[in-house]
Length: 285
Image (cartoon, rainbow, N blue to C red; front, side, top):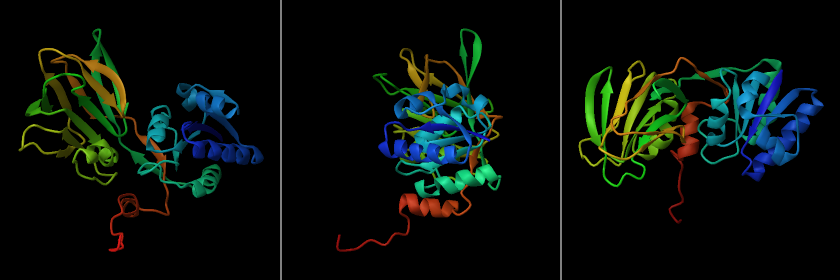
């Protein structure tokens, strides 16, 4: 058993937690490799470039918030990912800092379970060749620096859904429904639901609302504009600047992300905890 470790190096808590984890792994005579930037920050080895982690390890450990886990998941291939929350909301990073050693030990002993999460695949054309991009949370097309309100044309399985005048379009998985889509007014969807949600960003049409669709649908999006470039983001990373009329095809990826599950918590508890549902407030404050 060999662990790959990815750390949010901007958070001192995460760095301190990594020192605790690597010391414990050393005492257990368990192998590990740190992502190279994390290794440099800590002064601890061995290290490897992040795109080599899945080849070198059996399980990936993410120490940070959901953003760190998203980064780790992009390079985990199909290897299990343990998310330790050193962030704020932490919908994906289900384990607390106090639960870190017990869950890592459970993985070593083989007494753990997995949540399989669907991903999106965005297909674009570059110099006549297809480029395939994956996202666990969402694929987003934005207006960027375009000075006017662009029109986003959306088709489902080749049939026109509509033309949305908006600042952008979010296509989110059920996992990503509690990320950017939720902040833009989209619904919360239970993670194992076999659906995607299309959420417009600041639509300039009163009748436009988020729509939930089957994850078997193939979504095509283009920007109806004469000039400009429009950022295509996968999980918050700008991966391409789209040209006017350029088509992006988004569908369910054949590759799943495998998150180590926290069996002591359920999704309802996560919602209550993270969104403060049902909390009693002191009327005097």
